[in-house]
Image 1 (cartoon, rainbow, N blue to C red):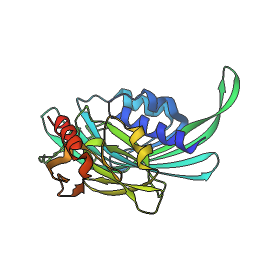
Image 2: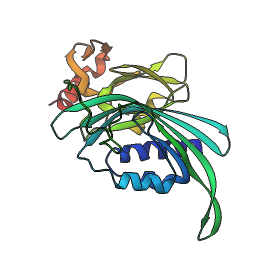
Image 3: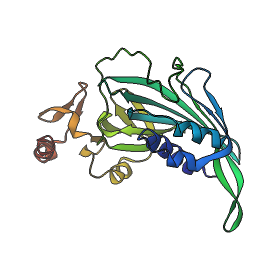
Image 4: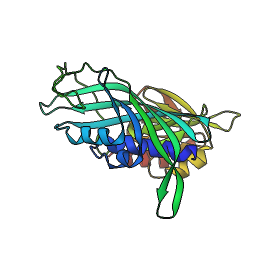
Length: 268
């Protein structure tokens, strides 16, 4: 059970789950899975019971996910604990949207299963805990459809949002919305980069050239030390650009005309 594979699978399951596609989730749960839901004291034990409960859930809710932070630890070579931290936006038939800062804790275990080629070890979810404690209503099965909500204006990620996935210097994995990223620069005298977002700065291992090669159609190289998101450029003047948070980044004199033309075309 490779750590990187389990992280990718964990992200895939939850992003599909909130598209109301539960097939990847059901494909990975063990027969004795423990599911701890978002409502207080909401626990379901066993694959059969869990699938029956979800089959009885009727709702008209849709969801949008924001950025995801992933922490993975390995208590043993056959067990992985994966913690996801993300924003989830619940859209109600009334037209309101509710936002929650949610944590999701998977426990993965390599379990022996019978396959056409004989017994094999496969990673399965033995427990899953969704941490935001909604008040429970007997009229609800899984989601709090009948809860009273105070809806506020908020910025919800677009369905067409592009995401990038990076591993931070502290070992956490982050799924970041490209629209939240302002620019990327190099931490001097290190083999690290800094990703500057609307909510903070994230340090990752790597080189600017390598990062640029991974996302060639997203960022614009304005300098040997800077990649930026052209959508956040608010002003271009000789020889600098200003971003939406007020940050000013230098543009080399020799490349100023070329960069200005490129940024203007990107923002047309």
